[in-house]
Image 1 (cartoon, rainbow, N blue to C red):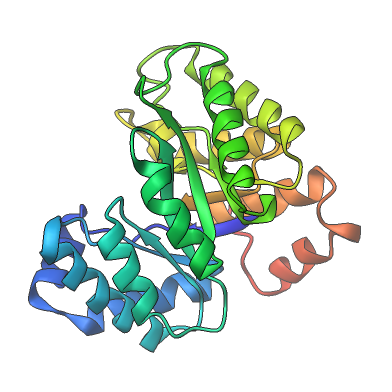
Image 2: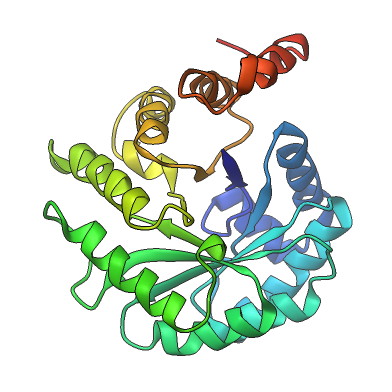
Length: 267
């Protein structure tokens, strides 16, 4: 499972304050803690707009990469902010751009950047029709987006398809639609990664961590192999490690046993 640590996001009140005050120690500490907890990428979302977003993105990238050598996921729809992030990034590991969609202009703006930088890219299954609401819509948009990106020169292994997680509180059938989409996308492009904003599934509900933990195991069985999530949730991380063993992604349960010896299997 490829973990994208979600916590450095300017839409969160404490992060917004840290960005505004340039509290580098707070951001660096959060980046370090996520890396130590098992994050493979550190998400970097300024949560601002315009020129301020460009400046905030540069500062965040400088601050994060001074704290950890984990690759960064540059999370912004603003091509200028993404280009500034790439120009600032000096890590050796391949970073990620989050995201490109089939909404008007998105592919045209982002594809040249992805190609030139040779980075990973999150392909969010949104189109000009907006948020998918019916069975089959997520995978239909994902297929078109995968085809568009690969035809443009992006390798399937660089693509992290996001089927757009909606809260199950909005409609009882949403969970099944998402799981069906994950399985269908996995069949359509076995080489692609499938990711998601994991906590979106529980939005509006009490005991959200329980819902997130229940969902991740089922989604991994369907084909999910990545998630934007909180790596500091020790029980969630333990669920992922156990699920990998159950679905045959951990030979002889070696990772599970190693995690046990390290005290990481909190239940």
